Length: 471
Image 1 (cartoon, rainbow, N blue to C red):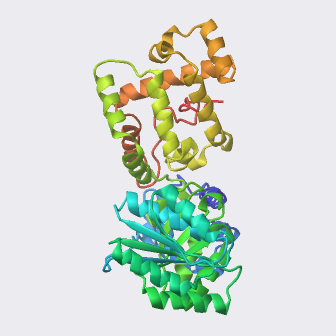
Image 2 (image 1 turned 120 degrees about the vertical axis):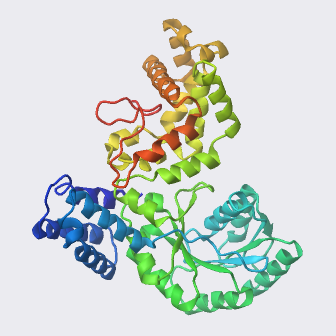
Image 3 (image 1 turned 90 degrees about the horizontal axis):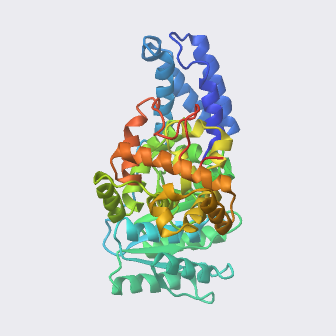
């Protein structure tokens, strides 16, 4: 996420990191680089100008000049101003209205409204324990209603039927009545998009807004449209009482222009990020955490939260008890840890949120893909129960059989066994608890300046890699 912006900003800080003294010229040169990085990221010019001016005002003063570590002090100022630009703190949905609280989804065609409707329904059901009903008022796009019905089924949300021959306002009234009768907590309304902003679309969605009187009106926008995303959001904001923004496809947005512009231009907070195609890939937007990730400081808090939600608690407890009793970390346990990593978005996603992870060599990040993890699981699955429980029995002939059964090479089997030994040592140090405890152990590594190291097995300087990252 925002890789090119992150790379460019971190390059601009290289010359000032570790300096014992900064001059106005040093700061001026660094801010020129920051300005260019933001403009290349397609951040709106007025936003860039204000941002750089705010940093300069704080930097050319005692806060940096008298600091014992002026380079780090300047980077902290940039992080603080970046956080302020993005919105200071997370703003959650306000669903305190008399049930059902209505959430109206607005945006252009292709921005990801229908998928985001499903993701939001899943989020509210799982995280907020809400009873959710969804409905589509998109009577123009072929199969739009069918698409939402499928998505709702996938996330376990109830779907209110509608037809392309119905009027959008009639659908909205019918869904609202059904939500009241069914005692639903939340009604999420997916609306029609257009290829561009036009009067008919704005009149229709304004009418829906009048009918439904939503607690939240969210503008769904594709992050990859860059500065246009902020301008489109402003046009919608002028026509609708928007309460927030859902920024989609941020996993494919290397620049970050939309995220850095939309809050400032619209005056509305970004509430959620769509971070992938999967229906669980929706994250609450935390400005301080995103700022840290952009500056290469990691986002360990989000990792800890993910571990809390996605790690199988029973398995974690069993593993902890097993290791405390002196029983080894076997290949069954390794497979469980790999599957839990997959649940958390894969090793690549974990790396991105680790302090320093964004600055790891690209080839190393590439090695942490889903294909590699699947290959490792295939190797473990090709073993006998005895081999998984007692890896030391795996000698040459067994390695050849396992490689043949998993469609891999003997070297791949050797690599997995070596990585298992490394993981076993790590688990022994953590005294059990597996993935959840590993994430907690990392929480203190970031520090205020992002100077902490990576967890055991993640060292870039000749250290070993975690399971699935060996080449």
